[in-house]
Length: 72
Image (cartoon, rainbow, N blue to C red; front, side, top):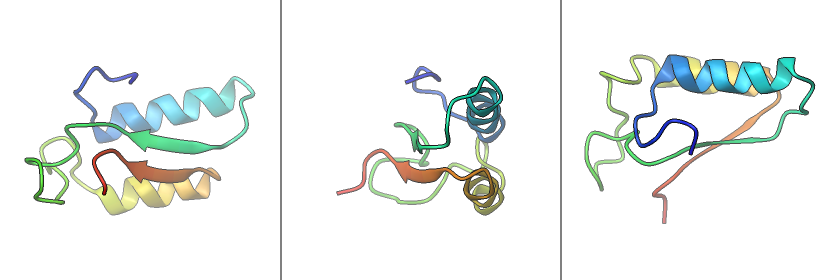
């Protein structure tokens, strides 16, 4: 929702870190539409998410759970 259909690795991480720095407790981070190359491919768009494993690992380190929009 925060990224207007243009999520990217660095902006998702900055958003989550900013919430935590402002005192919000860690919760679920939803990576909304357009994280994949195309609907149904189930592959991160590497132009926007060059290292999705590192992003998800860092969010887990921060205490957040991660879900991706579009999963059945």
